[in-house]
Length: 164
Image 1 (cartoon, one colour):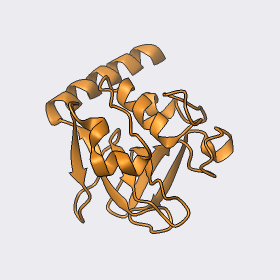
Image 2: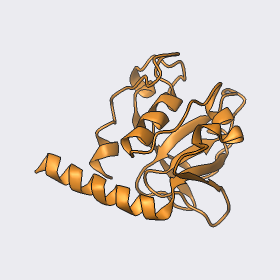
Image 3: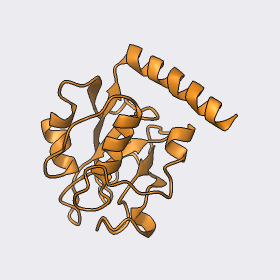
């Protein structure tokens, strides 16, 4: 996994300074780190997916989940609501997603109260690709191809220089 994502694990971010340390805060911070910020979700992670408004006018493109599609590291992924979480969930794809598992770098995946403690910090976990208890995987946003390659190369170079 690249240092930009790995360095976030165990930390917290309150991007909009409202409602504590939510999953949406980390998704927005990640997009900014990728030099392609996204807008406000207005309501919930699920609203962001259903309306697409945070991504309008950006370099991010929507990919709806299918049986053959798999998100790549750095993509912004969305999970549907569950009986215990009516807001849905948004996270960043980590290295190693397959057709049977998702690797998620995410914030507020513990109790969901946004306190930034324990499992509500930014963590990494693996879940089944489609697990109703965690929320059915809806799809993701990825940077458009030419931009993605350029961004990956710049991030790799800048991370190498920082670690050297």
